Picture 1 (cartoon, helix red, strand yellow):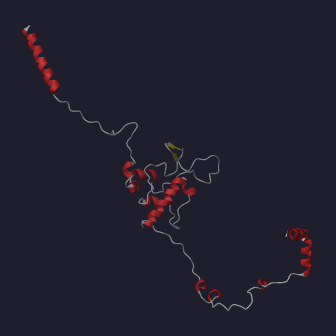
Picture 2 (cartoon, rainbow, N blue to C red; picture 1 turned 30 degrees about the horizontal axis):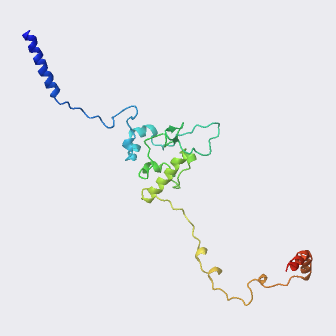
Length: 222
């Protein structure tokens, strides 16, 4: 009896000690490391410095030394390919089938600092941007490419090709009539048809006969 009473006292003391001991909880993370709804974004590391992706092993294994649009072929119906590329490959959260070379790779960022990517869409001989029918890029990405290339040229990251213009000496001489002394004005008009010419009498009679009823009404109205 005394032993059981002692056990009850000891259990009560232990329970009181446990209830007074503070419990520390680890705060939950605001954003989990990985989840099904928010997977790890492997392209985020190339967002600030996208040119590093072009020298990575993943890029070399996928594209090699060729441009990103080299082996691209758009699926189409029939033997004749479409004459224009699609307007955009991504509408909201929906991605169309067989997207363009830039939309299919989320690690390619079209900005003016990504010079190595922009050079793939510029002709090395003429310095002109390739047509989208050659590269297969959608119209949305084509506009972004042209804008980024123009910004890179303004910042001095890409060379600007100036077209060659042949200058002819005849265009800059002052020996032709357009730059000579102006002749004095003539006493009469410059052109003969500026002067008053009396119409033929037969033509005057014909017109009077033609408009005689209207002239009568006009005279009667006055």
